[in-house]
Length: 495
Image (cartoon, rainbow, N blue to C red; front, side, top):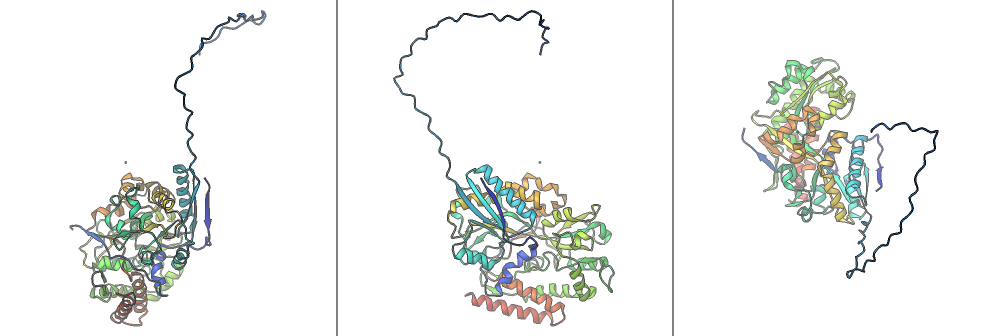
């Protein structure tokens, strides 16, 4: 079996997770907005003898035995003919093409290993994988024109399912190895649309909300023994840990509430406990009082540190944790909100191996809930796939524990299915314990906010944050304008 790796995108382009999470949102500004199912959540109450020497002076004479003639009795022919063995037919060669979004070497190396596993299971099966397929418009165009691959991994189901460019998978589930019972409910529902399953969580799909910080740099100002439960407490720690505190260029930023997953509308929904979209009435309300309070808190914190100082810091120091020059890995930032993947990234990229890191629940507005959200990649089959049976075979492997192991070993990412978590191989990264345990201990376990205007609303939320921080308008005015724009989009989509 041949395994081919293609990369149609320059390796210099790095696809950030936050960029991936916002992809659909950005595209909606040009009129490409999908529809997604209402938020689903679960609420719970607050591993060899020695030979004798032979003389060579006398020749060794080997006695000759005269042959004795023998007579073989004749065997009567069998009354029943002995059948010839039936040859086992060679499976017909088949192939599939897989498009993936990321382009970094580690991700593509993991993808190549997964295709090698196809060889082991199906020697006649040729799989070609290529990276850099993250542009929503191009993906939809390719699928609509019949030029689609056999499998794609994406981050959000709604925009594709609403355009009927991907195939419902319910008919395959009964006879396959993939089962909804192997997934936490919100994780499985991330792949659902209009009551049907269109995507299978795979490769990188798990807990994406937690407070991560450098305990060595934080000292007693941010302690795992008494972590902040309220945003006000975390902001206080962030101010104390910022050096210098109020003037001059920032050498070390204590906490950036907009780094990692902090600026996502899903995060605001989870930490305030208020959903801005009502799936029954299809009404939107991002201008609610809890979102006002949250946004005002971010602005007040930025104003104390200095918006210009933070802006300059962000020009010099990368956000997130997936690059060697990020603030967390360089020791130039102490804390951020991020997902499970941060722990393996830090372990691989931190410049000081003596540092210790911790993770815990994100603070909430009222300090009374333990919230977690599940999200990530989904394997889907385009509606125009030429051989859906081959596509489904590949999807099942992408969703397998074998694939998750390949991605964990090479990228630190995996799909947090019940079976993979039970296997325990993730324990090579001890700091993952909080994230894994949070799946079963959260008082609120949610999925991504999949509704018809989630992408569009994220863009408007980003714009609102930047407008208020720049001092242009009050949060009330900005959120009211954002709500008006989202309501208009709902009406445009027929809501």
